[in-house]
Length: 330
Image (cartoon, rainbow, N blue to C red; front, side):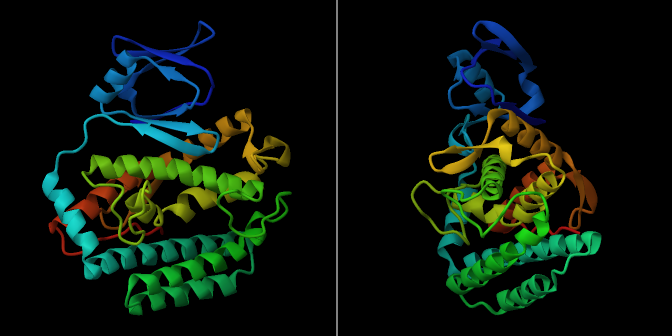
């Protein structure tokens, strides 16, 4: 089951039997079967009828509203009723020992996956990335001796800064510039693409966590903050480089996006509507790519891996497994 992207603004969506019909200016644009999708990403200006919302909720389809490159809201059906898991999650969150254990495994996976990506780029494109690769290796060793979450976050933050120092080399002669990671506002088109990719990834991981019975707002590496899906941000760390960063690097180097595909909006570069559709297609294709899962010993799509990792985390929190096994790219 995939994700349906409705990027066209000012659409009207209504239910007909087990299908949804999408109209614009009274013209039928598309008709889809609800059971083909696990979630829908919808332009903020589009409208769904109450019957359409009821059908999507009944079938367990998440609805995620986007404004440009940002997620602005979600509509979900009945939540998972596993109260014991929620209690165990809160207890683990309040335990410094368990929080540090989970957070350390997540950061180690992030650093290893990032290092694996850089090793691939260095080998395939003959890039001089030894300083960044060596730094990430040393950071992994430091994580093992971190005694608290603040220290762990400091190690992760410095490693991320070192990693992004390599981005100008990775994007090469694509015509884009990159002067460091920036979130809001994005200072350049590369950061804009990264922000958009992370928003898509965050929305999907939030849905995976909820399906596994976990509360996406109660994290371990990222602590509680009003309105922040801290656990979603935690689990994202394992996938940022392999799913989003690599996709951005690949698409700009292949010429999928040009400077002309961006416009200034509220002081930051944003993808134009036609280019945003192109990015969504690239992202959707990437998440369908298959990868070998070391723990489960089989190949599966990244989309399935996201859900499996949420389940593995839930099993550890419930005490059904002795360890949490993060996703490690090969």
